[in-house]
Length: 158
Image (cartoon, rainbow, N blue to C red):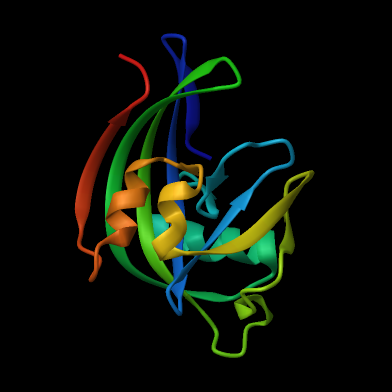
């Protein structure tokens, strides 16, 4: 995967899935995390970011998805577990199959990321402002109707 340590920071390339359905967004978090994030993962060397989405959703949820258009590119600078991170993120619109078992908005789903059990949950788009969603530029961009392509630069540190 594209993740290296340079000059005291971790640099990585990530692809994330924006799964919207009936006015709600599918997000996930790892045990102990206080924040929610979009499902996805690090891009492998030689792998298209859209293929990363398909692979990660299959690995994490056992779900075959259709990766749609690129919606956002983000340069994200953040601290995580005492480590500075510089991430380039590709955010794609993604669709679940019409008969997917993961479309029930009233359930919490379990998924796997390596050795961690992930918690997946749907949140109404209208309520995202009250959700601790990272990166935070997503609050405004996902509330836009219709969603429009954007390039975001988000800095939690200088």
